[in-house]
Length: 219
Ligand code: DX5
Ligand code: ZN
Image (cartoon, rainbow, N blue to C red; front, side, top):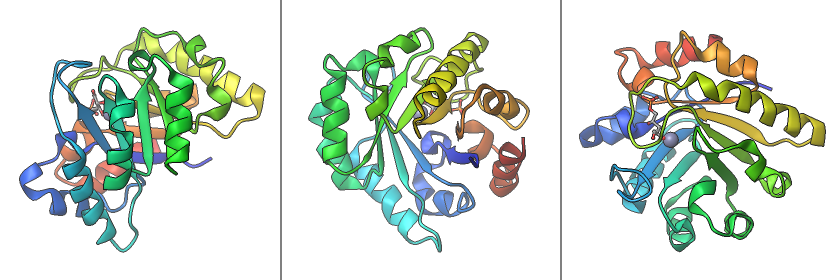
């Protein structure tokens, strides 16, 4: 399975979002970090920016799917809005969902890919009875809230366990990793079994975004 690179626009210049998205045209997904100041300490963006990102993506020769990472409490209240704004993947946090199965089913009803994210300390077994329904497991490799943090090594055994379980069940669920991914460490995530690499500062902090994307892909 090929590696998919998902630059996080959290580290982009929002005054020039269209050009910033054009600069990552060689990536695979556009990762959008939605934060509510409650589930995480930071506040970022809402559906309006997702809509702007979608418009920018649609002006590319090869439009990229919009991967929306909801770091918000009660995400069910906003899923339809984000889907309408253009989300192709909708990811909720297991820790933010009292009825995770219901949230996953709702995302699928809305016609998006259903993602479930786990904070670094959250054990993989919260997925046991929902994994078969999940399209993407987003493993946080930093505590969510900010770009530019260094990755927490303790998460690797969990990624390996989730990989083994997906394979054991014969599922097509993708493992996505988010936080501290760089060209120098991307091979470790690959070896642990991840296929989707989110990278914010490593891509948007680089002068040559295409080279940064290539370097993560090659690793
Ligand atoms: C963190 C966000 C990440 C963040 C990654 O809460 O979910 O997507 O933008 O940024 P880097 O790649 O800089 O760690
Ligand atoms: Zn994210």
